[in-house]
Length: 80
Image (cartoon, rainbow, N blue to C red; front, top):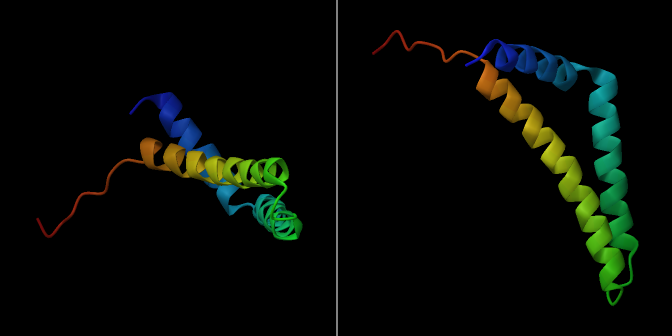
C-alpha cells in the first residue's frame, strides 16, 4: 500500500461519511430509478440511458469502497 493509497482511503472515507454527499448519491440513484420506472417498455434507448446512470452511480460508490479497502491496513486477528 502506497502513501497515495492511504490518502485516497482517507478522502474516500470522508466522502462516504459526509451527510451531504450521501444525500446527493442517494437522491441521484433514487431519481434515476424513478426515471427508469416511468419509461415506456418499448423505448429501449431511454431504458439503456437510465440504466447507464444507475450503473455510473453504483460504480462511483464501488470505487470509493475500493479506495477505502486498498488504503486501509488490514487488522491483525489477535485470535490467530
